Image 1 (cartoon, one colour):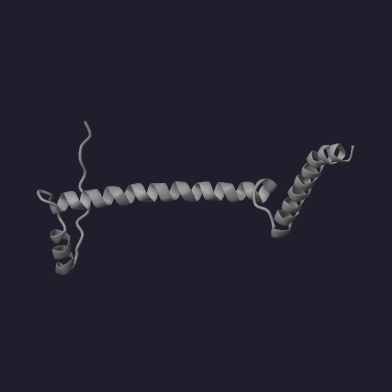
Image 2: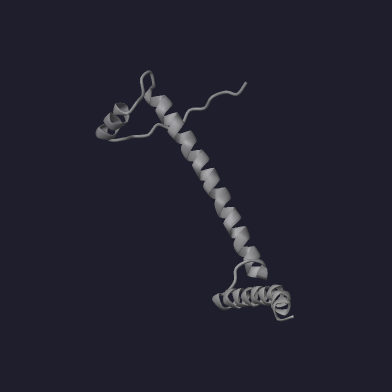
Length: 102
């Protein structure tokens, strides 16, 4: 069984405390609210750190030529795909063209 720990006390303005107390759910204490908020923020930051790590890894990978393209490279790739598609269409239409003539 784990022992609980106490967070450092924090000072807040009276109006901030009043706002917090005004949003508490029935039966919820200010301590429970703060604990929930702290846990949610810790989870959020852990997810954020993981996302940043994934993004950095992707950028490193892209920097090694495995990912991001320049605009020119992208357009050249699209032109090659378009030419290949046009060739496939010509080849598919050629037998029909021959049948119609023969």
